[in-house]
Length: 451
Ligand code: DSN
Image: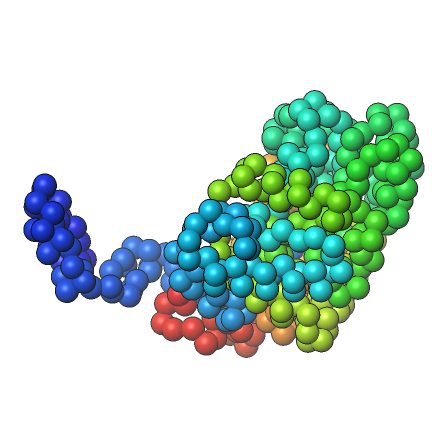
């Protein structure tokens, strides 16, 4: 490693003589080694992460495994390019090819969702939401959104998030009896507080969201309507969930959850808001877009337009139902009684176990989940009374309902024996063997380091 660093040192030592500096810093003495030849510290961590992903059962509802094609695009030379601006209107030269990439991503997203206008530049879902707020709101404006502890999202007005600090966030939640969104309360609060923006969308809600009722409430109080479909982006694109597109002024999403693309954000809006939204993203809050990630988004949108992807989302939902039914059969209470989408929440009350303790023990057994508040939870967010389970990732690994039920039984075995490391180690042995039978499609074809 020290050999490869030498040219830089010598270049520096040649000081002010430009000819010497240029000679010292030449491709001849500055080879371009592969990562595994130059930086073992990073390689080791990447290798360990690849192994972790391959050898564990991934049930975090917001995670997935991208295809080899998406990985190739994200690892491409597009990462070298600055392209502030939009296709055809950039502030840098040499953008003709990345223009094509971004236009492909935009056109495919439009086709996927039937959107009037698309912006693919936001680095994450949080930035997609921030762009809408920056475009349409003034500090102090009122927004109406689902509360975080009932399944909403940080960026929907949580007090510690920018959205809760700069705006007056009024929240609705779920009903105590059904644990489904309390649409009456949402409407009542809209009429009472006259928000500038009504937000629908959640990160831990297992049921169909009735976007019509949000659109009605927003219209009746003269508010704008935004739907954040980060979690259900895949289901909306394949009509496994009704689309908010015809109703909403703005729809935001992430590209890396059910949509199975690279980590990033996506904004769709009515043409009337296109200019404001684009200006809010750039120059309003971001500089150069991540063109390699946008290339990955283009590939993922292309994949999502295929019949195979529609089947995949159908299987994701079927697997979530099979697994939640099995958990219920094993004696657990499932929030709302089940699921209509890719995730469900398990109330661990029956075992008198916290979500935090459950997640830790399950991790030791090779099963990755996240602790999650359940509605009206009596425990704090760091502890929680529940876990959130999702099936997008394991469905990508081609698991079916039988396998999902088997995972549910492993989860039960661990949760019933939290203090018995022998039982947990036994489950770990079985999950390891199981993971080897269901390889991650992309990693399967990668080189030694999975990079
Ligand atoms: N953190 C994401 C999730 O896990 O749902 C939401 O942004």
